[in-house]
Length: 154
Image 1 (cartoon, helix red, strand yellow):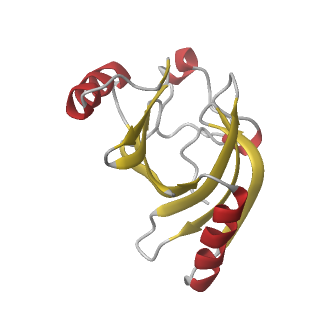
Image 2 (spheres, one colour):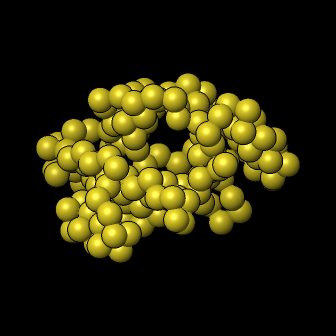
């Protein structure tokens, strides 16, 4: 079974964590200084929030699969949609090891298809690198960023 995924950029992680904990009636399944995630069964959703972004709001939407076979099925659906596909492949992102690809819908919303097969102790590596929470406190919107902070659009 596939799981719907939502990732929202938030201004205040603790305030938002408190809000969504109350809304969902449960504590996050993953809680880091810059990230929180609830894996809910009813409704079946992977709901994540993170701070330290230039803008707040929807980060991206996605479809999480339970197997590589299901992921291939979603990839075929991506191919049937009109849009450029970015095949990221195996990567570390959001404290997880995953295989993923991306497509952007006509409104500019990024969609991620992914299969998670492990955990990692860092937010991300490579293009998914995110500055530490301490340095993000001083991050300015007009600052030139040479690495992806987790809010990059593909």
